[in-house]
Length: 386
Image 1 (cartoon, rainbow, N blue to C red):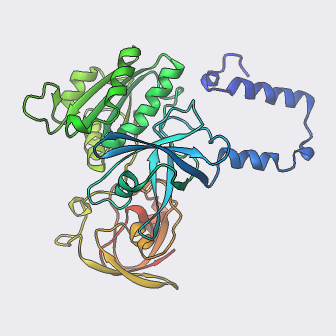
Image 2 (cartoon, rainbow, N blue to C red):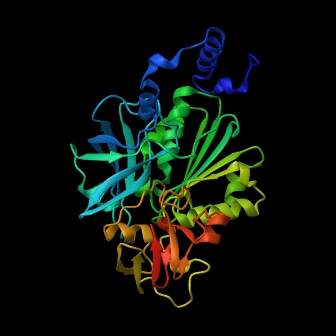
């Protein structure tokens, strides 16, 4: 293998390659390893982590950072931008939600997750208003493919964030500040008002301390007399701020409507999909506004869901099937809750289900009736297989 292998930019790659070469030269008897390999894999990729809330940091009036400390040892490593799935019981309902890790990968004594209370939300108000220091929760290990890849993404990076979508961005920024890779990073962060800007002070300090970082805040609902940038992110805005987009990599994380609008805008500008990385952020807030939703059907329309061999229950057409199943006492494996990972797949045996654009269904899924329940909506009475 060439001594100047490009993969050497990956932390630990050279050491791992040297160990492999040594093993190839001298041989290795794995008989004495016992469960060491299995234990190592479980430590790096655990199904569940037992965690304690060691601190609650108020970021804005509606957002909190929860510091999660392991009950034993250090936490598994992660890449800046990845998330954990947090398992909670809210009002007697066992459920889970994915949250990006906002802390830096260099410190594995804790994970920080930053949560914004969503109007009408089920889990986020409970986390923001009800979770206290000392509370016990569990999570998955780190997951996701939304992270900076130094080999393929280059060194000219733009991040479009909205609301709590800034959480993976600040993890990336903290990581780049610690490692000083030579990459440029431009954060364009949309908020409704200046009071909604999460990490505002730290972002200012990081920008002042690091030449690689540019932070642009954009306020959509400014108060009278506001002097900063206002409006929404559009093609003219991107051209003014970023200039020539060729060679840049764009990360996008915000509310579903923002993700959809900004992705369409970039594609209309001719920006290639291979350089656009989108982190989905939950199901559509209003599925009835999406293309393909049955005309005249209210989100409140009652539907009956029959789980083959396990009974039935009533829900509303505008409730994602995964949420409805959990509230009815059914447990479905899940992770991203945004239509991408496919862990929550269920099979529709009869009835009609609406799948928005977030549902990354395969051709075989559509052919045989499988849907991603986290972003699937029963628009008639349905029978499903779980």
